[in-house]
Image 1 (cartoon, rainbow, N blue to C red):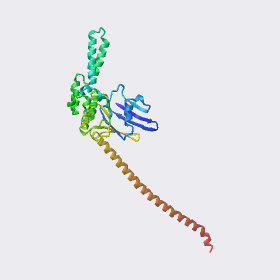
Image 2 (cartoon, rainbow, N blue to C red):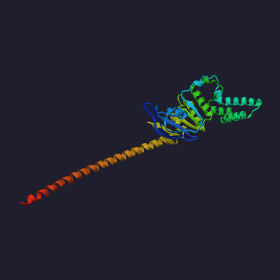
Image 3 (tube, rainbow, N blue to C red):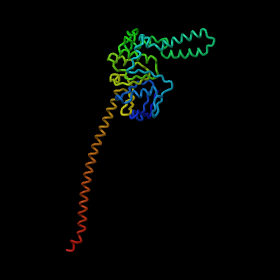
Image 4 (cartoon, rainbow, N blue to C red):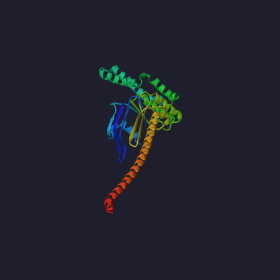
Length: 301
């Protein structure tokens, strides 16, 4: 789905990425990890809004790729005076109302071609997010997050953690081509964190999630990208497998370092022996040369 190749980007006086590359394939659930300040949120924003940035390398995203996004700090929607169900279903309800308006227009119109095309486009969009099944789909998602009892509550009645889960459900319900979440686990207690885990694991689409949460990392992902010191490591597999890979690499480096140390010791010993041998040979040669110089003089006695 997304290909990043030899990608570099800098702020004034600070380099963020130096020729990083990775591929995010359809259906992968990818954890994006790295130290705070390493540039994770910036890279996410570049993926969502590439036209805003001047960068080197290539960033290939399919045309018309629909991206869903959950920000760890976004709370402005919570001020809307609507129920949880109405909030999640906003897009479906809007499309359904649009279909009804078009039908009313067609009842009295003399030229139907343009209206039929408009109707089909709207119907396709409606079907993409579940069509007439939108109510049951939302109910299943709420049940998965253990929030079914909140369906008819006003948004203002939710806790911060509950609202974060509702935001996640709303974005997932829209069926984006790519779902991006920037530390969605922030400020969640364990109950809500477990609900977030269930939502992530049940989602069939492609996900890129910035997180430091070990519980999510251990249970939710089949790809890891790790950004550190302007470089990126890409690993296809679970976080546990990734850690084993890092450990194995570290052990390998330690073994190589040990081998290098032993080799250095052997070389040092060999060099010492060679120097001693060279010194002895030099002294022997000087001795032979002296004898050779003295021999004729000595023979005259």
